[in-house]
Image (cartoon, rainbow, N blue to C red; front, side, top):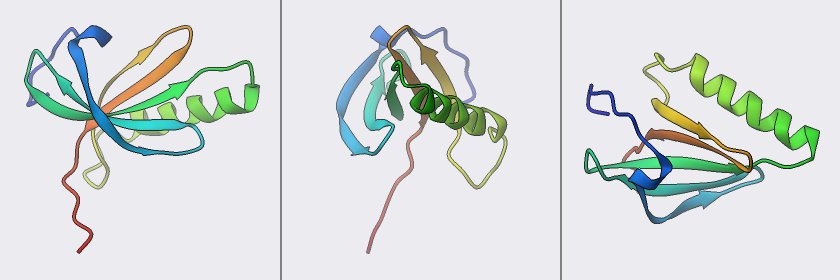
Length: 97
C-alpha cells in the first residue's frame, strides 16, 4: 500500500460497507488500519462445490497474474482461510455521470 509492504492480518481491516455483490461473493470497502488506507476487498466463501471453488481459484489467478497491468485495479494481497478467500485491491474512484 502506497509503495510500502505490510504484514497484515484480517483483524487489521475494518468493514466500511458493501460496494457490490455477485455470484461468487461480495466486494466490501475496508479500512486498512495500519496505513489508514481505504481498500476494496472481494470476499468469496469457499464451499464443497468444486465448480465454485474452481471459479474462486481462476479469479485469484487472474488478479495475481495481472498485477502489473496499468488498466486494472492493483491486487494488494489476499487471505485464504478454511472458509473464505479475500482478495484485497486498490479502491478506485467511480463516477457514473
